[in-house]
Amino acid sequence: MNQALLFNDDIDFDQQQDAWRFTALLSGQLITIYFHSMQLKRLEKVDNCTKFDLEEIVELWLEKNEPESDEIHINMR
Image (cartoon, rainbow, N blue to C red):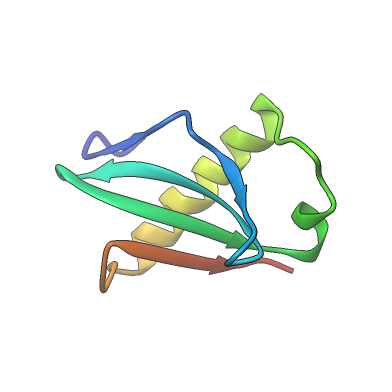
């Protein structure tokens, strides 16, 4: 796990973005992460197993990308 990245336990569905979202602290900066996925949109609730998978996806995304703002949008198939 990236020590500069701390996930908050606030995952919920954002109707406006039509995506699941949660926040995290990245090197002290609050960022919002959105997951755009047809499969995830079908879920009424995200369980802990799925949440940990999403956190891992964010960590992998950050290994290859730099956030350009305080939001990260991850499109999943």
